[in-house]
Length: 244
Picture (spheres, one colour):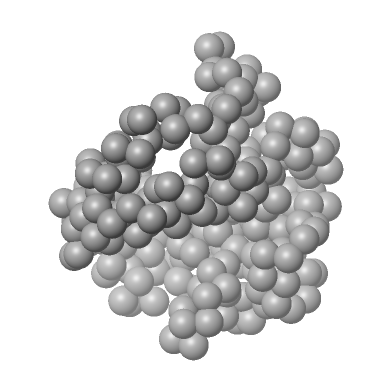
């Protein structure tokens, strides 16, 4: 707990405006080092970690907790969510799968509704929201008013705007994303601009991550031009393909 609290305090000194504690990461590497979803097996530790971080940073800084339903049992979320709230979590985000389930469908959204009835802090629904129809079904099943969009936003960058429009939060949301290179280019240019200065391998690392992003989108909805960008060996060539 002390290390997490110190890391959170340092992040705030560097300018972080919120601290989100991830108790849901299913990565084997993270789990082997006693992190991420491993902590779902120890509710008391979730409470202690949240409390330690909450005590270390200014009250104006939100401290939230993201978690899966459990390591193996979906019902574990009930205890873990209560412990996170008791530790002082500002809100709780729930990816409606267990660690054992990984990313295999389905997401069990009904558990989120039950958690909302057991805690008093906001509960954010997450998992398998790939489309506006998915969002509507998730909202109906969970009763939630807060949502986190992860892989769905990578596959369709306009999805958060569509959902915002549905919620009445964005009056002029972007039209449907046609996945044309001209639409992807400004997003990836901004990604490149933000990441090249901070990644150790600079442009080489960013090029790999941009290809990874497009591969993910391509697997959800085939991009006719994906093979051309996949073969590029420099950022200049990568953007030249997008601008053709």
